[in-house]
Structures are given as C-alpha cells and as structure tokens.
Amino acid sequence: MRKFLMAGSLLVLLAFRVVGQASSAGAPASALTVIRAGTLLDGTSDTVRKNQLIFVRGERIEKVAEGSAAIPAGTKVIDLSAATVLPGLIDAHTHIFLWGEDPAKGGYDANILKAGIALRAARATFACRRSLEQGFTTLRDVETEGAGYGDVGIKQAIAEGTIPGPRLFVATRGISSTGGYNLEGYAPELQVPKGVQIVDGPVEARKAAREQLDHGADWIKVYMTHRSWVDKQGHLASQPTLTVEELAAIVDEAHGWGKKVACHAYNGVGLQRALDGGCDSIEHGLEITDAQISQMAKQGTWYCPTLAPYYHDWAPENTPEGKRDRKRAEVHGASVQKAVKAGIKIAYGTDIGGIEWTEPMAQEFPYLIQFGLAPIEAIHAATSGAAELLGEKGELGVVAPGAYADIIAVSGDPVKNVQELGKVRFVMKGGSVFKNEIEK
Ligand SMILES: [Zn+2]
Image (tube, rainbow, N blue to C red):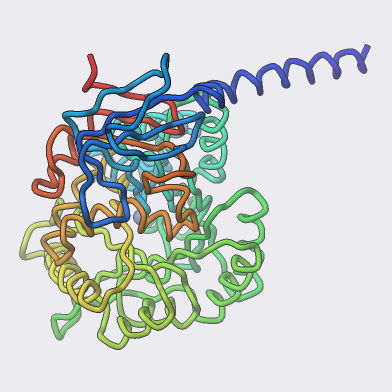
C-alpha cells in the first residue's frame, strides 16, 4: 500500500511538472512566432534598426532579419511595426520581500514584525507581477530581509509556471556583522529577529556563505556599511561592518561555487574593505573617491548605483536625519558622474521594495542620464550591461539569435524621451506574451 502510494504520487508529480513546464515555456519548442518591429534597440548596439523581423521559436530568438524577409505561411505574426522594441529590462537591485519602509506604515520593522511569512510571500508574488508588467523580465533580488529562503521558493514558483514573474537571481538571506543590521533599537533583553544573517569572524562568514549557497543562493549579498550620518566636518560618514578578512572568506567561498558577491557599501572604510576583500559589485556606492574609482576600474568591479531612492522622502531639513538624507543624495550624484567618466561598468538598480512596489521601476533612468549616462547607455545598463553582471551575456538583455525571447515594446522613442520606458505596452518572456496593449 505504501509503495503504491509512492508510485501514485510520483506520477502526479511528473504530470504536474509537464504542465508547469508548458505554461512557463509558453509555446511548444517547434512553434514559430514572428515579431514585426518598427524600430529595434537590440540592447548592445548604439544604432537603431528600422523594420526588423524577430523570429522566436520556443523560448529563444532564432534570428533577426530585415522586414522584407520571407515569413513561412501560417506563422503567428505580432505586429509592433508602430513601436520601439527592446530586450526585456533587468533591475539588478531589488527586494521582492520588502513592502516599503514608510515610517507612517511602521517603517522597515513592520515588514518583519507585523507580516507573517505567508503574507510576505503573497506580497513578493505581487511584486513579481508588477515587475513583469513594467517590462522588467529579470531581477537580481538582493536579499529577503528576514524572509529566509523565500526568494528561492518564489523563483521556483515562477520557473514552474505557478505564478507570473521575472527571471530571478536570488541572494537569499544577506550577511552582516553584529551591530550591522536592523532590527535594532529594542530593549537589549529582547531577542529580535534580524533582516540578515549575522556573522562574526571569517569562520562564521564562510559558513554562512556555504549555507546560503547550499540552499540556492545565486548571489551572496553582504553589508559592508550600516548606519550613516554627517560628521562634524560636514562629511558623510558610515559605520563599517564586516572586516576584509570576513569578506574575503565569503568571496573565496562564493567564487569557488562560481557565484558572485554584491556589497552594499556607502563610502569610507566600509567601501574600501569591500574593494580590498574582492567584491564583484558595489551597491549604492554613495561616495566613491578617485582612488577607489581607479581600484574598481583595475579590479573590474561593477557599480550598481541607486539614485532614485536617495532623492525620495527626505527628513525635515534641520534635523540630523534631514542633513544626512540631503548629503547622501549630493555625494551620490557626484560619484556616478565620476564613475561614468572613468568608464566603470554600471548596472541598473532601483532598490525597489525599499521604496514601495507601486512606484515605477523606470524611475532610475532619468537620474542615470542626469548624472552622465547617455540615454542609450542607460538602456544598456538595464539590458546587456546588467546581463553581463549576471553572467548571462548573450542570453539575456539582448535581441539577437540564441538569446531568450524576453522582448518588450514602447510606443515612442525611449532614446529621445526616456520616460517612455515607464510606459511599457508589450511584454514577452521566454517566448510567451504576458502583455500586449499594442495589438488589440
Ligand atoms: Zn537594497
């Protein structure tokens, strides 16, 4: 009886798996769909191509041809001839498990103290749908803020077709040191949960990395700075967290698994330790010195600035928090300008989740352009650039033969008016159309 039950449940599992694969992969592998693109921005080239045909077979792009090319009889054609077609966008810094940090709604702490794990998973599901609706077909989600390995589960649910959502590259729990992360400010007698895994010493650091990688982390996220303030000389200061030795152990472990390490680092000692410890990407990087820019160039370190959130919700001007908020924005813009001039590799990131998921994910584009990127460069930061950061060059962030058919379209010209990227009207992921407001 027991054996029979096991065989039966295995069959059910297998059947479910087949259905799941069909709905996530979309059309059967043999079916051809052709997209007629009026204008094509392919994600890598600076030049725009007119009247192109994109041949999609199964979940990948088979070829890109001139508009006059022959289309086999009976092929499904999607007519985007009046639109601009681009690769699906990539946001390299998100938190699907964060539901904003608005003080009026309980701030960061309410995410952990007031919402149970099922509610948090439901919110993450909402976040994934929001992302896809806005044309962001891939996210690097940089830690769950106390929701454990929930991101691995959400990623599985998307991959099996249970819920709609972008391709997820997940960092699981995040790592910082004692005194280096929220929740904080509670009575010392209380054991409050933390939004990351806390480690002290290289042995614990390596063990945490091993645990997270073992449970499905695609990336490791570490916090190299925590609190920040304006010091007596009027400079931005930030509290360093992990030591170089602790970070180096994490980086060594992650690299051994073929994975990379993203370092949250505002400035100063913590940012220096991030570079000396061999991090792969600097997150936020509010204030980067010239010497640190040179070190990043030499080491090939990626920069994922997140300008928009630092221009939001400043505390009142004459309070310590208000001064800090204004200083952070001021130095961040200047650092991005320096990095652009030095040719540092920049990936698009919003930190959405820290800001509410109802906010537009395209809001980082105008800031990147304001601080020195050409519009086409800002688009590349969210397509082929971010794909390279993820180790997915040629697979994601490009409309070219062999790449996944993650394709979006907007009505206007996003190079002339970047606000167009906030009005994505067509979304295909892996050959499946998720949204089509252009053909009605
Ligand atoms: Zn973040």
